[in-house]
Image 1 (cartoon, one colour):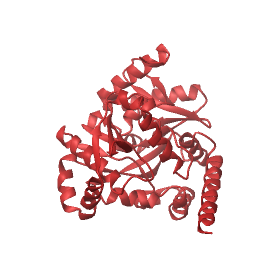
Image 2: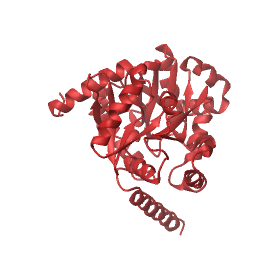
Image 3: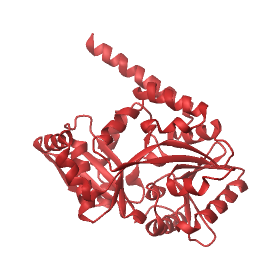
Image 4: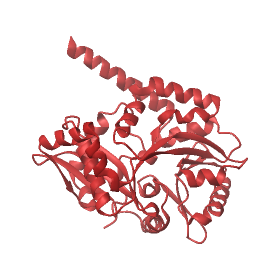
Length: 357
């Protein structure tokens, strides 16, 4: 039984129906996560998931609608934003939306990163030919790790999932992120999601949640959380199990989502943003391991890398838009989030020095 007010439950139900009908952006199902508001067009044939920060409506990916209606829906949504005296930034938009605005003088497009994509039908062959990946999967299995399917409703109420998530978040340098990297996925709509748990001797050590990408007959591996002491190869074993299930379903598409700043894709951005992103890639790995995340996914030999974009309805992408995106992900002032991360990192270094002493 839902504990949400009736109007919010109706909104979620309507949004999910539209996602199942038209969801093409890999983040489409994420608009059903906690903290996302919903705007519907007048006919009820389109929905945009968004959050409001710093004078912007930050749209989660792209509007969910029929492809031929994308132009009309973006115009209506941007008119709604103007009524609130806000601009719009589409966060983690993909090729359909980029193509729509490619020649627009009223929209600025910048690269955020890339996401790896696979054809699950090719996954078994990838494992056979990638010795390092195969060894990691085998290592976890030899440690007694086995993977089981879990019903979404059961996972949402299982304290073991909450404990794994808590331990995983504590181990991160940055404060918990939100919006399109919301950790409380099980607090939203769980129906239709795939949930896998990795257990060792009856104890859960990790879990994976995948969300459907209906219009591409695919899946998005949205969250993978593990205990700090989970055996090496546990993450690879979970991904292998998920990919094989996708293949059994006959799916044609799978992704693990955005890798920010991947492959120097930001080199076409404005000079000031390019400078910030280059600095972040070079020096911010202490807080967010851009290069490590890219390497982890690259070793699984994706079929291709797809560019992911930030698109704002302004002639030039602004520092204010970037700040609003940061605020959406951090849930607090980006400056405060960085300060917390620095303090947390300093405290960890002190603990390491104390242990050595």
